[in-house]
Image: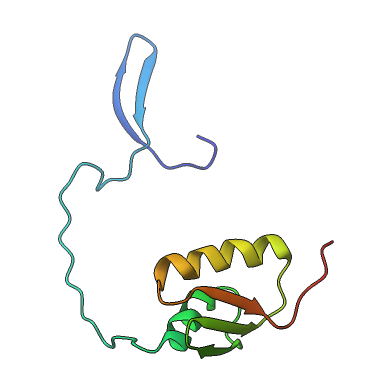
Length: 103
């Protein structure tokens, strides 16, 4: 149905019940995780937060201020600033060096 895979549970009296849940829904899952590296440097933490946006980001952290060289609209800057402050409480202020004008 609408290119979504489902499992037919029952067919009776002209009615069909289709389950669209994932096959593992309701099951207990156990994961094995291997930690390859613990990132301790704040600039590297910020780069990892920004990695889905750009791999080539320059970040400079001095005391409680992070300077990020990345073009982003103001709305994204505010959102990302809040996320960084939430994830790295030591960072109190974030400055974007290369501002992108609002469209």
